[in-house]
Image (tube, rainbow, N blue to C red; front, side, top):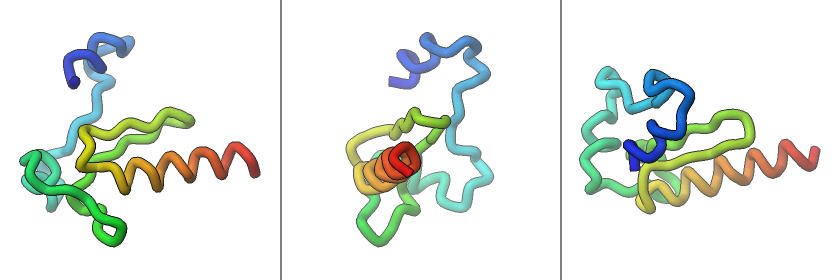
Length: 76
């Protein structure tokens, strides 16, 4: 997935990954932790204006919450 997204960017430097300094880096990058309704620490969701992206289905709750924020902002 990362390769597909990177190819679509104007510059590969525009790809935003979890910084190693993030206190939850291992949790976010291991692929074994999923977010929940009450815990988004494992999630990695990126919002760029109206575009929302998440790494994998384990980020579903955080992705949905962020996408809902985009929709609410558009209707306000």
